Every structure is written in structure tokens, then in C-alpha cells.
Length: 117
Image 1: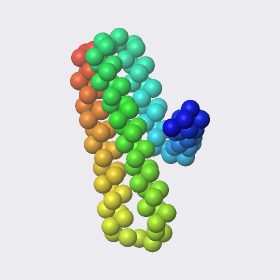
Image 2: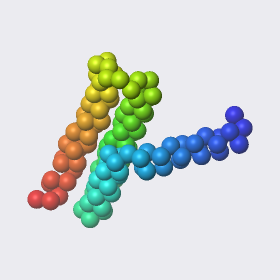
Image 3: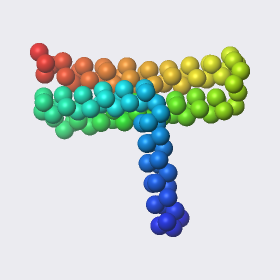
Image 4: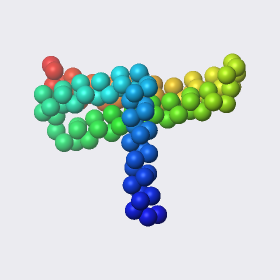
């Protein structure tokens, strides 16, 4: 892979990121919550290991949301009619986002509750 191809790959990746930011409200909600958590981390001066956990949680939620959106978009391209199997797949993709989000909230509570009280 040449230098031009690598640069193009990064360009496409950033275009995808801008697209999901512009078009997906849930992704923007996750970004806003991530910013709030980062500000809280700065205010409470959380240690480096906690920052690592926060970063992993934030990125995991965002990645899960991106994959969920991709799955939904592909399935919407394949059919416009209601299909119970399509619904099942979309629901499972949404469940992945839910699970990562619940885990992230639990990690956040473990990190921030002791500092708040």
C-alpha cells in the first residue's frame, strides 16, 4: 500500500466520522456525555489508570454506536418492508450498544462516586 493509498484511507475514515456526527443524534449524545465525563475527570483529578478506563469506555461506546448505525443502514438498504429477522438483527446491534453503555456507566460510577462523596 502506497503513501497515497494510506492518506486516502485516513481521509475516508474521517469522512465516515464526520458523517456519523452530522447524521446520528445518538452519536452526538454519546459525544456530549463523553465531554462531560472528561470535564469531570479533570475537575476530580482522576489518576492515570482511571483515565485509561474512562478512555476505553468512551471509545467502546462510540465504536459500538458506529457499528450499530452501519448494521442499521445496510439492513435498510436491503429492504424497506418489515421483516422480523431484520428487526431481530437491529435489536441485537442496539443491545450491544446498551451493554457497552451500561458497563461504561458502572465504571464511571466506580470512579466518580468515591470522589463526589
